[in-house]
Image (cartoon, rainbow, N blue to C red):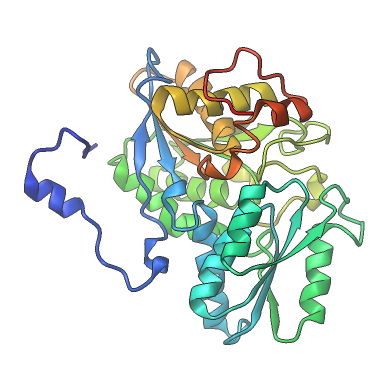
Amino acid sequence: MTFLDERATDPGTVAAAIPAVFSSAIGLVGNTPLVELRNLAVGLGARVFVKLESRNPGGSAKDRIALRMIRTAEASGVLRPGATIVESSSGNTGIGLALVGLLTGHPVIIIHSGFISAEKRAVLLAYGAQLVEADWEAGPDDPNNARALADRIAAETPNAWRSSQYENAANPDAHFTTTGPEIWAQTAGSITHFVAGIGTGGTITGTGRFLKQQTGGRVRVIGADPVGSTYSGSDSSTIVVDGVGTRWPRSNWPGTYDPSVVDEIQVVPDRLVYETVRRLAVEDALLLGPSSGLAVAVALRVAASAEPGSTVVVIAPDGGGNYLSKAFNDHWLESAGVNADGFADGSSD
């Protein structure tokens, strides 16, 4: 594995790492860095590397699927020039679609939950998205659930296309063709364990499938699941971690999630999720979101029991800037039922 950091002294090496000049922000999607956890993972026999998807232009891994879904739909003709894109999203996919839609000439309507952070809402509006709030607690058979509402809006809007991130094959394909190969190259093929949270399932399915195919199944794929999600086989209840998990029964799991790719799923208590978010900031200077705290907590467990010399790579789906009013706010955590007493410093009121 080759490192380029503040100790690099060869001007040629540094110059080679400077990215090209792009014609638009679309060129910035993908090729995100890996950063080793030197403090949070100290004393563990395995090395833990975090893939920082916050370095995508829209701030999350969802930029990858937004670009892939739009380009695939344009190429097939189902997304016509100037057509409106409609999607239900807890925030990041909506941001990705708004960003790419803006640069490709497509207005975007996002159906979101009241649970979305104020920061995400502001970013969506900044990119020109039209927002519609839905009942995120409505079940799969309820006509008022977010996906059903998105279907109706798409049907009623002239020249509209429903991107359907939960069923669109371009979602996992984006990670099979970009995220997986990037991790393989960045670790020089040394990866032994891959950890990711499960939302639509696209990241863990696409990336995990590539890594397994590349190694004949040697890489172990581990899913991280929040309390309240049914992916782990648990009963459905309230989920207080943005963008991951599902409360729907297995029969209604996203078509973009392939459970056969995943070797095991680990559930993380809410307190540990948010404590890990705080520790990432104050110990490794990584300001990341709650879904990253979820996945990193599992990665640390995996590293603690893995064979010495193992290489664990974990996806950090987005940054912490969009959660300052939530994950880094003790009052919000208490309102969500998470006791923040004893957390690392860095909270706000």
